[in-house]
Amino acid sequence: MSETQPKSATTGAPDPALTRRRFLALGAAGAAGAALVAASPSVASAAVRSGVRNVREPEAKTTLSFLSWDTIPVIKPIVDLFEKQNPSISIEISHLQGPQPYVSVLATRLLAGVGPDVFIYTVENKTQLNKYNYVYDLSNQSFISVMAANNRSFMSYNGGVWGLSVAAWAGGIYYNKALLAKVGSAPASTWDEFLTLCGKFKAMGITPYFGGGQPDVVVEALIGSHFKTAGLSDAAIFDGKATFAEYWGPPLALYDKLYSTGLVPPSMVGVSETSGELQSEFANGKLATYGSGPWDEPAILADNPKLEFEMYPVPGATAASQSFWCGAPTEGWAINAKSKNLPGALKFLEFLASPAALKLYGSSSGQIITTTNVSTPVVPELNLCAKAARASNYYYTGIAWPAPIADALGNDANAQFELLVGGKITPAKLQANMQAALKQLQG
Image (tube, rainbow, N blue to C red):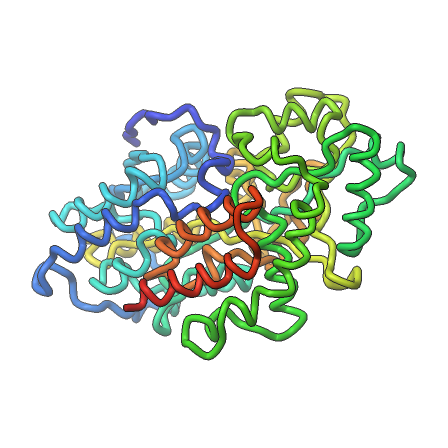
């Protein structure tokens, strides 16, 4: 096995700058799209539909190239075990940090005809990879049956399944249990309870809440809960059958009360979520509740190993049954449709879906494994979060919105929610601005 040393020291756990608003919003999609669009139809491979219903053994010694999104320390134990169990196949690993420069470099290599046998399929590149038939259809492979519902949906396009996604994240509200005890409360189960709880923390001189990134996980979950309760779908907005004002009005009215009533001080709006300051404030009892995802748990414990805390769902609008989560499936592994090592590549993906590989990957990456064939441990603080991730019980605009325009519209949402929490626009104005941005993007 040969490998390229990583340029990043990341552990493979979700990167805060990546998983917050949004893992697709670093401009990668545009670069990849431009590169792939430059290909003529003759450069792109013909559409490939798999006729292989069961993975078969490679006929001879095979070397597979694998461009990993995870760092080498994360993925190497899994590859080592695969090579031990499959001595006729060796894996040549290289690593690039996602989403940039990964998506752009992958596009360039595919265009040049030197693309890796196995690579990442995700929101930043799935549209263009499918448009130019660079991915192999896995629909007939039995191993894809282990994917959770949202993971499989994320890996699907135009009737096919193009990748293997085995993990997800769910984001909610971290509560400091000692501070909850001081106000004689349990985690809130309705939004009014949460606002009342925030008022109690404020009266104690403690910052009640902060949600890093905009839109933060709380407003995403409020929107998702409203959609689920009312039977709504983002598709209606993008098809012109509904507006943001019609669909976002109730959840935004709830969310805005955190800021318009002065519960969250204006000084918190400009605090950077990636500086470590928020995790430290929470770990040391200066911030009572914190809207975030599982990626912040290690930093919180590192700052205060004795802290008792846990992540809970975002409270429901009027009932505990409406409590919900923000979240999304993680990227998937896909096979190059032009791979000369197809049987070996299929064998590798079959292995990646096995309990042995998934247990190793969950341990090395810190990801919440969501497949149906294995149960991997998580730290106690994330028990409820993991349960939601495995049940696909979450919502995230970055996945729910259609891929071709989700990136650009997400950037508009970033700006609009920053203005909202800063008190510079109203929810009604935000909704109108989002509608105008969508109209412009759709031409």
